[in-house]
Image (cartoon, rainbow over all chains, first blue to last red; front, side, top):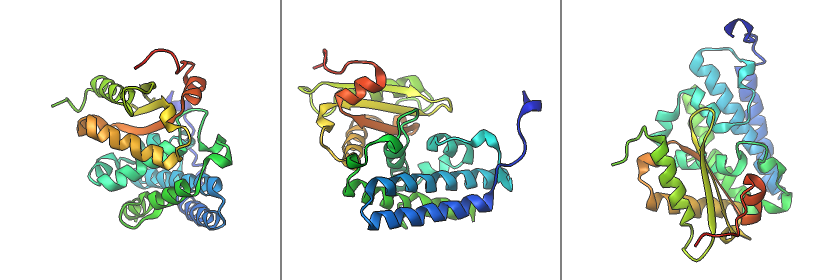
Length: 147
Length: 101
């Protein structure tokens, strides 16, 4: 019922972007330190925070409402209104679905619960490329859309 | 041409294509489902994935899909989760070693 929906933001849009940039920097640091699973884990959170910031941007909100407390990256994408834009960028879309496929298994099993040994250097390196490549990365695309 | 707004057909075509991965003499199980936000996800279990790096699994399975499924049917597919048959059985409750070509 609408009357019971929480309407107080749980975090500001600016804070989400700050956290996302921090998680991305930490993912890079972990990659450089050869902590492959940790790099992927934190890199996925960077995308999650950027998607939440994009929802705020699209809806002209200063902060995120509690109803968006989810790790479902594709579900968050839906509420950004950016799916048509992503469809027009096939390389970025491929990066996005690769990130989703690796990080978010839609349910109780995500990469967060994989044994670290299962995440190899090639996977972590590829994941970071999907995140931040200037042409095909999801985060540069999201940054442009919310500027 | 497949209707873009026909998620049932899209899901069926995706599932059939995944079950044909990677070749006919390997058992492969697949399950395509719709999320609460109306997007498609796919689970695919095959021992062809055993020992294969996670990123490579993504590459081979998406290449396989793009070669076999019309592009408009893949537009609403937002995640493919490849795993070996033991992982698939644990995830879905469907044993992966019985039946199948």
